[in-house]
Length: 203
Image (cartoon, rainbow, N blue to C red; front, side):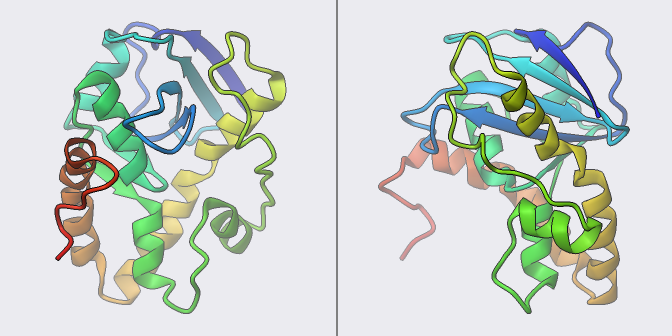
């Protein structure tokens, strides 16, 4: 694994391909309260790009161009949260997307364990550590352990997607998965609009 650390934005004209794994690190789990601190991206080639977001930053031009590029599929695990944080921070709707957590819930109905750690262990026989998950991502200088943890969250998503795609096809659930992925950006925007105390889809 090779980690490339960038302040504020991706390098200009940096091509990550047509399928880019993306994850975010934040100060907490509530988009209305907590800020975005880091965006991780990988083409699935063993390289990970970390983009540190400074407080109040609004214009990482190259990153935003990627998020808006409809020719690039953005690959997430639990896209609902990450897409909401990106929308809340930059007022940009990230699309099209693929969510490995949604795919897992559609086909791994024999379990209620759909976390990234479980998928890495089951599909890839890889144990990943979550030790740095709750660390201070707003710090000006991130530790090497934090960088490694952040990179690991996108390193395996392409391989996981490949396995889940096979299962979705086998179980005849690819079309419903695609429909769910298409709705997720709207669901994330509704999360930001409605707030934590109001679910617009509830009774």
